[in-house]
Length: 251
Ligand SMILES: Cc1cc2nc3c(=O)[nH]c(=O)nc-3n(C[C@H](O)[C@H](O)[C@H](O)COP(=O)(O)O)c2cc1C
Image (cartoon, rainbow, N blue to C red):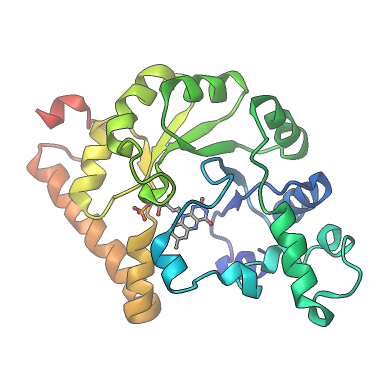
């Protein structure tokens, strides 16, 4: 996280937490994120377990088990304190330690108090679909939710995130910030999400596809195309900006 922060310079950055089972590691992550200048905490709730992913299984694509994607843990003093040997001397032990704490399916709403105690900036819960959960998030003093079904990667038959969005907006839109992701691919999709009540959208795969195809230039191209299409869709729908887009625009 420190390397990413450094690469981002003065840009605003949000820290996404997969909430480790070990509270000392969680506390350490939050302290490091704050020290590295992250201003918003995004806590992903829809991944207490990794789901059944046949394509990953077919290809034995399990990078965490090879110590890939685990850098925040392996570099963490609280994590390292639980190891008999340094990570580079016993990678398997480090991986097993990671697997034991990656996530905690037993966490529930009162546990959010821990985050409030250890993070003094805005907190956003990612992966909310049900209006009742959104109400509980608001009751717990959270600042926002991301309506998301993790791109269908967790429960294959989950409700479409766009179908869930209006219910969440109606339940809590006046109490916290409602963001949206899952399936945003075009400027037109952004427009529809805004019209359904989202304040903003997040992009998952599209920028990564751009990155895979053409590195930084690919990412810039993806974002530029999306913004250009949004700009045109706004204009063609009679809007000078995003602010006035409402559900009326969907009719
Ligand atoms: C390969 C991959 C890795 C992901 N890793 C994370 C993650 O570490 N944390 C998280 O909150 N979401 C993660 N997501 C979910 C995305 O943040 C996003 O919610 C989802 O892909 C839906 O958006 P999209 O349709 O624009 O891709 C991941 C998605 C993909 C495809």
